[in-house]
Image 1: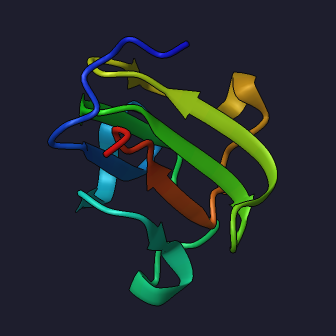
Image 2: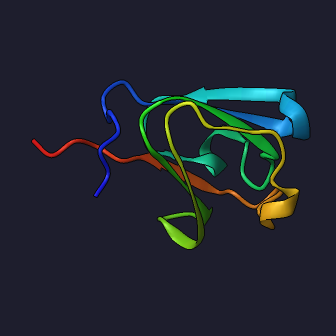
Length: 94
C-alpha cells in the first residue's frame, strides 16, 4: 500500500548522470517519444507524487518506481540508463 501524497506530481528527468544536460519537468503521464526524450534519461529528481518509469511506451517493459523526494543521480547501477520511454504518476483514488 502506498501512503505517500499523490497530489501535485512532478518529476524532473535529466539527460546525463548527476542531473546534467538537458532536462524536462513532467506533471502528467507522458510518452517520452512525444517530447523527444525517449531513451535519453540518465537521472531524475521527484518533487511530488509517486512515479513509474517504463522501458517501453504504453506502460510496457521494465519499470522503475520512484517516491517523493527521491533523487537518483545515475541509472547505470539500476540498468535503466537511456531506457525510459514512458512515465506516469500514480493518481489518488477518486
